[in-house]
Image (cartoon, rainbow, N blue to C red; front, top):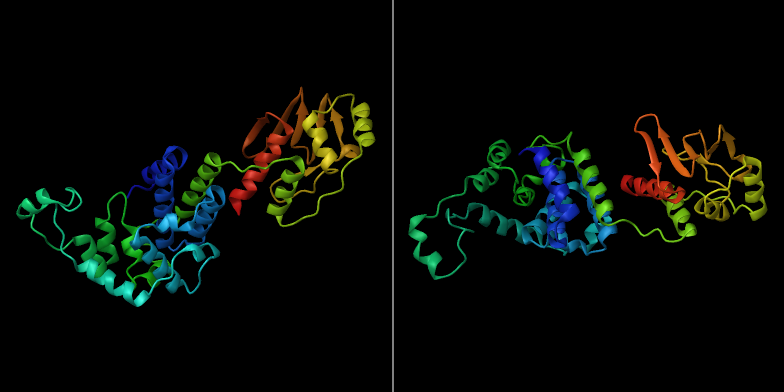
Length: 321
């Protein structure tokens, strides 16, 4: 498969397709990540999909073969993530027998092309049934042959549902050679989910609480007083934007984390050449009414407001969890 083309199509579907198609695409991508041995990335993708959409996780495994695939992977892994509690319990021995039969079942070239009915029955002789090479490769445990036949949208559900192969997949057999691609795939799809389903961060107290929760439960400083905010404005010679004043009324600055600077309270705000420094180090600035973020790697970003900068921070934190 062409990993770049696959990811481009998957991201496009997550951003623009009808919701059933989003669920189908995320379900396929999560299994694709899992069969590369990247179960942690699959778990991250499903967890973010569930948090953003609030749809039941069974929507990702509506196909019985997908449900079977997850069950076989979890057995091989020896653990089940929290989200898997939403999947139906299965009798794995019975599922293994059913799957073995399906792998050996002959198929016709017309299978799936014509709907069931009289016409399909009449033309059966045109394409007699024969063993399917892709499924035969799985039945024989030949991962290399399966990968060579899998095509641009590989049937990873049938692969993972093959009980004898699940331990090798969990251990990192990576038949499609996608191990290095998996983190970037998960990251791109998580970002697309956040763009399509942006979190509702509500009021300033709710936004600050969400940021601190995502950071791991750090405590916010108490609110700054109105007199402290006004004194800072007099000292700086500027009027702070109203949303920044609302932030300070919520908390007297914020401590730094690994990806965001310390946000200064009123007493620590300073002005340099008409630019108000809002953080330490000085990477978040107030200039001519604009909130400017200076990143030595990503470059300069002009945020439409101070709140927008913090919402972006919260979104990045959520994507990383």
